[in-house]
Length: 271
Image (tube, rainbow, N blue to C red; front, side, top):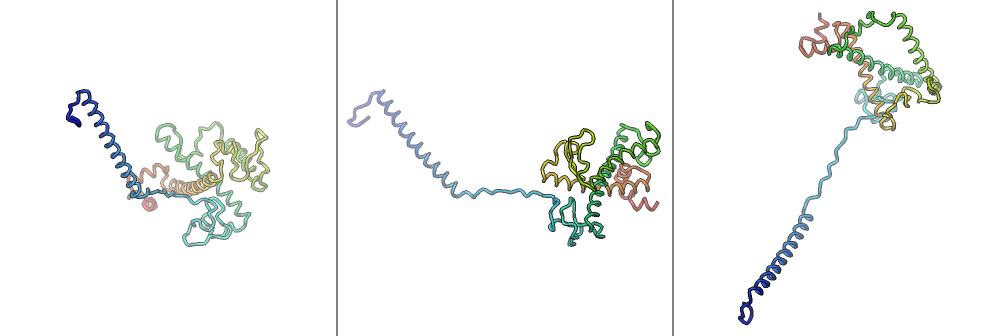
């Protein structure tokens, strides 16, 4: 019913109900929207600020660290001629052998060459032993390789071949050390030059461009000399083990793993 007490027709009643429902739904929607807006505003204002986490990187001391670099003996002072500019310079020269700049230049060159040969030597000792244990090859131990007679020619010829090629390569390296850049041009193809010193780079010695930028070059320098020093010490240990036990390094290691207390340096020396 409406004002005046007159009943509405069924169609008019339906229209009235629909309009009333739409009006109520609009009001509910408006109130809901206002509530959500107020809640969002309150949450934004009271929420704690987001934490920004910065992950600390473990950086390796690189060459050129100067006086702040770590030294081989904590609390000691590096000699004046070791200022941190060399790769792997931790101030170790207790006898002052590198005080003369020319001597230091020679020692740096000698160390990197011995380090590279030591790394190759360790690979040449452990690699064949591992392959032999896998049944891939059958060759004598590294300390018996000189007595191995199944070569393509006699040992005197092999010695002469090695002397010729190594003499040529070492002669050019010596010339570059005395007069940097005098042998930089490619002796095979010509028209192509490499760098000087122990790090010539270029297409011949760095074909993948791994040391293309200065930071990466310094990092690789440090890694090479540290691994090379470890290889030199390891090679002395391998030679000492071979002399004492007459066994290869992997055999010695496996024996120690099988019986750690009964297979030690002291037990070996006591025999």
